[in-house]
Image (cartoon, rainbow, N blue to C red):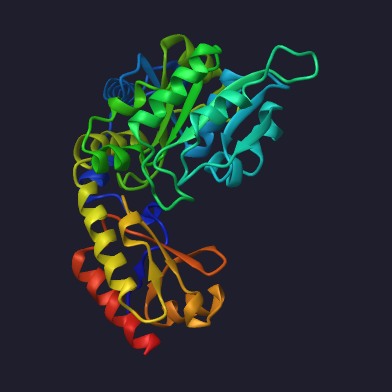
Length: 343
């Protein structure tokens, strides 16, 4: 029995079209700037994101860390949300690699209050670090795929800009935010100096992310990518599916959102389970299992016995993520199996 895999949208496999593009990609040495497929991907991403230039990187974490290294100096402070990916899930890289300290601010559904950021930006005092960067995350993973509104991003950007502090956007699932909000992605990116997007999540490319910003910023970021061992050679075989992802996979994210809401409604109707259905804005749903009396480990084992994979998220909370390989029929099948297991 094949598993129905809700663990993450990172489990998506490349499409047949992507595989063909990989095998047929025109390649060159990207460190020399001679890979035409990588160059095409970077130009396409920069245009879509409304930035001057872009850089193909191996992962979202690498993109975020290259951004921090390029924006900041050792001893600077980075302001970010207390449950952001950069703070929780990047292995302390900001401290280990860039020598910066992080200043987490508790947000509401992943969104920091602009007034809190204004208070957090340091004064020119000999005792204080410089405020080197504000980092945002959209959609916000730990908040359950919540969209940080354009209005909030605009207010934060203006607060930071008034104090000459740059803003970086961890947009690993930014296209999910744009599709859910029904606006062009540039409505969000205009309020960030730099942005990182993942190609390997809902967009279904097998690997890679893109960091975009000004031409001068990307020139410096390219050197930081090299320092981190990210200098790529005939990388067109990886960039080719990324081009297809950007050109053909954005609009279909709406299907993932619809399936996430279908799943949330179904889970909420099962005794012992609780889901904030109205809070499912994109492709991530958080299911509370406290009333089942089961631990996370026991519930995950129960799901696995039914041929379903999901991820423990917090104590008594399981994360379900929909993606291209989760069809409406599979959602219904999963709900039937879970009902049977809990009956």
